[in-house]
Image 1 (cartoon, rainbow, N blue to C red):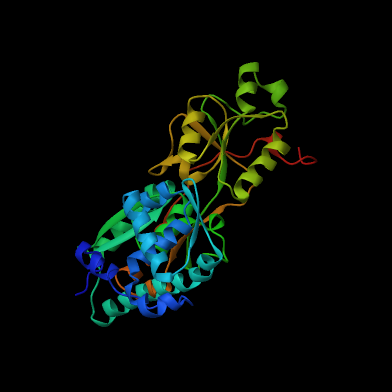
Image 2: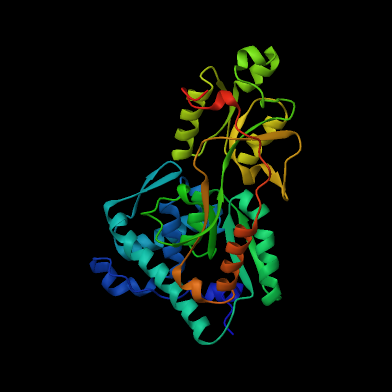
Length: 354
């Protein structure tokens, strides 16, 4: 049985020599020195904001990372990055090399998985990364279903932002990513997408803020309640989500002001629970187990739900135990009952429908 997650096996794989045509006379005699490890370092640095972040992603000390890049540049006979403080930007030669590197890394992964499939082996560890809400709510039920058939399988779970999930997938440090489909560009990631669950957005407000009978907030709410309603905790994502939520608040609560910006829905919701304001968030991020988080109310809003998907190399769809696990994720998503949310207040209807 081949177990790719064995650390010793992983180190051996990194030492494999990779022939790549670098269109350089120097490479003609020395290209056999290129290793998969160097290519993984090259890819990660190119897709990271800083060297520090790339080193952390790879589990390397920064001097070691720089040394690997220098070796690759020596072999190629040309600079692959322009150095700018703690950042590296691809040169023209580096950008030319990138598609070849991605092809090698992906082909090597497919080769390893093909060996496992042909020999009838199954991995003892499923490595996955995802956003907190899906890991906390949907994943446990899927793990229970998987263990009914594969009781010896264990998990290596990473909680990450979508961009980091994609990095982990591309560098082969995880095999499955669980993210919102809208957070990953369709044209860039090149992975199979499997729908898991639709997660509706809700307006999260402090528990004491009862909006059910409110038609005119200025008239129907006390001054302190009206102030809380117009204080917005915003989730900053750098995606269409931010634009959509900003437009929603501009239309529905034109007098609002942003009092805090967060990079986590869970943090935003806990600020709401502390009665600092309100926020828009996916329902999954506002529940514990199967119930809404204590101290908040969830109101329905007219926004498209986010679709949670599993991202993975296509070959995993037919390899066990991944195939069974993916089925278990879909079943867990299908059978999950969203917590009861309150009807949208009348003043949150679009103009002309109030």
